Image (cartoon, rainbow, N blue to C red; front, side, top):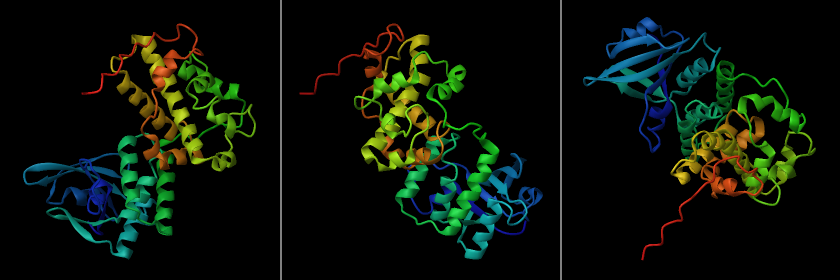
Length: 332
């Protein structure tokens, strides 16, 4: 094997900061000159198997233990983000660390790790872990260079080419047409905009003030950015609550009744809605806002399921009554 691999992921980040979670596998990127046979022949490798195009799953022997690792091998030099990463590691002289006895790698610095994480936090795979790691890294404040941003763009384009079906339709359509598209998949029993009215922070849903044309589904970025931060956050919260109610709470309540622990279910619905709004149900500037403000949005700020179930706007019989036990008296 020629060339030095690059250590990325949580193991590399842990060299610079505390991620406050258990570390996962060792994630390595290898130059194109590193063959699968050469990796399998390393004395520290106990087992090696293909894990998809250009990827290998290894088990490294460490003190009688089998430590899992994943290696991504770059294609032709300079043709993909892995090759770009390996070349930067060599050119910039990133420090070498011992992964396990017999295997060393260059550790990617924190700004590079932040750029890599940023490239895929809009994808739903392992989202909870990725978004928490992203904000932990962001809090360390590493400035991103132009080269880091180039790496992020390359990585994002590659991830979307593999995992994301490009949107085939514009949101600049009528509200009725927009919701008709997802009607069969969602199976709505309550109109989406009625749910917005139920959870609205004010007299009307927040999205109404952020449209140029009320009859179209698309929001105005200019109106959004001109709004106070409180209203921008409330817009994201309203959408998260509505998605959680529509796609999780209503089917659960109608299918088997309300869970016994309604507070925990409320948190589950909010987390589900925020994840969907931050990944598959939004794109562009609004999705980026939700991702960057996840720390402020991740906790729900009101008992929205109880408000929903008790709303006079909700047609009778839509969901079973929600009986919530009163809170315990304060301790003496």
